[in-house]
Length: 398
Image (cartoon, rainbow, N blue to C red):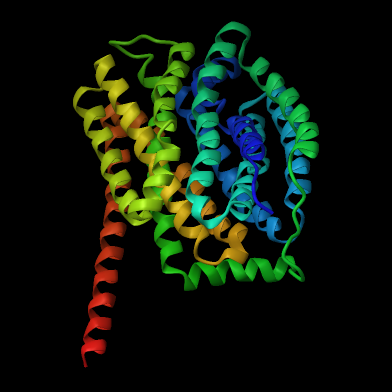
């Protein structure tokens, strides 16, 4: 069954709407903290709880895409996501906000059931482009979530944003029931066997391990910035509120336009080349943040570079892993995305810690260290591949 252009468009839009729930909180952190009577330091860890829930959701729910029809799972989780977002809107205390945020992340993995579905339906020659297109919807949702929540929160309060999101998710669940094609899962799979096979894939696929670690570090650096931006722009020389903090999502959305291009670049030059370029671009973004982040043009330039680098790396990494074991794409995606969101949770936490103790310089240091780890992993893998090729050449000459 080949994927239709209309189906790609539906997947693009659904990915954007579903993933946005995880990120509405970021421009609203200051307002949520004030309404609950807690400090910036306390509320600053809410993104970590949300992303930790997402990591668990990846492990718990995404492998089921290889066991059950994906359309049914996508519709069910969309409805559950609507319930958890409504819980967030009603939470009366910091502890319950954190718990609701964790639940929002737990059920917010719908887009990561859609991505392997798109990869399954796409022909090999177009897989990078299709994955890049659907992934650009996910990335657009991440970025525009901040814009929407900044405006809605500023005008109507942060709880209104979550009530709107709850209604959107219930409507989306009904629409996806009729818009997505039916697919047949792999026969004879059991959840226990799936869980064991996930660990087996992680142990036996070095490219998967490399992609997962690099993806986690890229997303960690991304999260360190976005989880603290609302606090940074509230300080001199900016003095901006949540609305302006959210508008920076529009700036970052420029990078989303390059996600399909990154897929095409991976198809032409190879995903390993694209990943290396993505890491270097992200490192350049933090150099700009540290050097000229106190100036608006410098902050804008850094946001564009960071989003471009992280998104290009994500597209290339997913193109790499989906080619490894075609019949286990959901499980491959589970290993990758669990690590990816654990990296995001770590990045959010150390970004908040860096901001609390060292201000903007601490945030920049947190992001740069994670990206240097990613570059080191890429360099090590390249060196190992060169050694293997040299060994094979020696054997063939002998």
